[in-house]
Image (cartoon, rainbow, N blue to C red; front, side, top):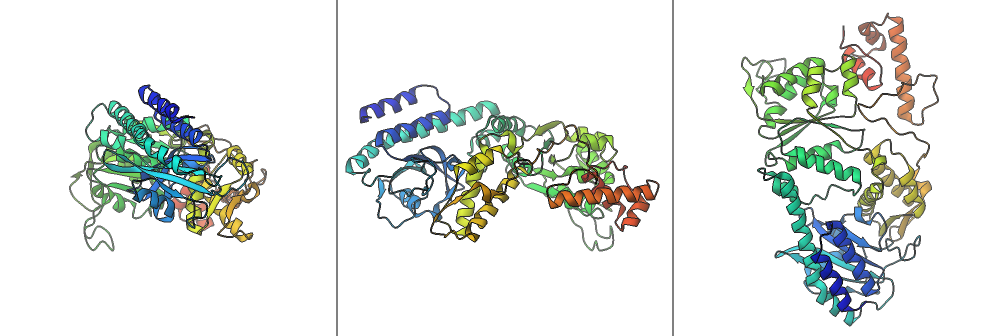
Length: 524
């Protein structure tokens, strides 16, 4: 492809209406074809300039788009960023290449990158990121190639600038001029990894509801990232400049839960030697995130409901209420509908919290996002373990796609971390290009998917059911059977059953709810 043809293609793409991702992808494909190289990547500075994140690649493995390269750990990228001129690294360069083992010109082989050429990109007078080209043939990037890339830099920056403007315009149209949301919406978020339709719908829904003052209930299985999406809601809201306070309701001791949320005055209880504000006051003007809200005791649920209705709190031991201005985002991996039906959660509080429920899709419904997320965790572990390169084999890619991920993103992170350690324990050297094979992932492709919160509950297995596959499952079965036997031996009296099991009654009820056993509203 001649320089005239390259210029014509890029100018045509600038003149027509294309989705942002498509325009940038076409850019990398055109450059790879013209320079006859193994891979081209367009990377954007992220995390206040600490990372470079690929936004479009051609010729790299499927997980490359999910990676985030720490600039301080990749001297080639750092060198390209520092200069405005074309930077080249020849085959005898002693600096490690961030794409070693990721170029797929010959799939399945961990190929070393021989030559590299790159240039820093500026947008509106600020350093935006870099463009990199990698070749497996020595001498690909000769003087003519360097001169041609220098001539194309202005067009590449024009593509980046147009994409940025289009993203900002769409964000402004969605926010409809609401105060505070426009800037936050156009902010590029490095924590969100995924290109699936399911995640795109979710991000759009979060964008729409973020600028309202409505309570939001995030629903999703364990490990889908509810906390991450709560943070995004806060950042996109008009309260972004104010605090976001996170409360793990499951970790609140029942005896101190009211004081933790609403605060207390001096002398309110034994040990209250001074006044103490609660989490609501700490979140004044901002957002309170109630994680695992289904674990709140019933008595505290009533006080939370009053706060949501009236915008007032009352410190434990205080005579007068106090006004607060706080938006509440709640999250649960349980079916609150079932808890309402079983008397474990107040119906009025459920309806108040779920003004706008948002289900977060499980990983098994996000298609190839699993590979992008795997790429993120591969790069994290490569840096953590001091490896030259960490990649997946083709069989591992397929295994990740097929597995149903009952533990979702959290499980994926642990799988990748464990496999990397296992590779080292089997003799891999840190100077090698380490490839994780499917057997190192330890994935049981027969594991059934987990039912989502508020979906129809599956029957709870008894001790005589098929043996569970994990230690957690074995313990759960044993605990269910112990609770059933204690209740049967004490005429379904929960207090007596708790004493027989040598457990606090309130903790017994929490445990029963977690195990899917129908418990009464509280200790008798």
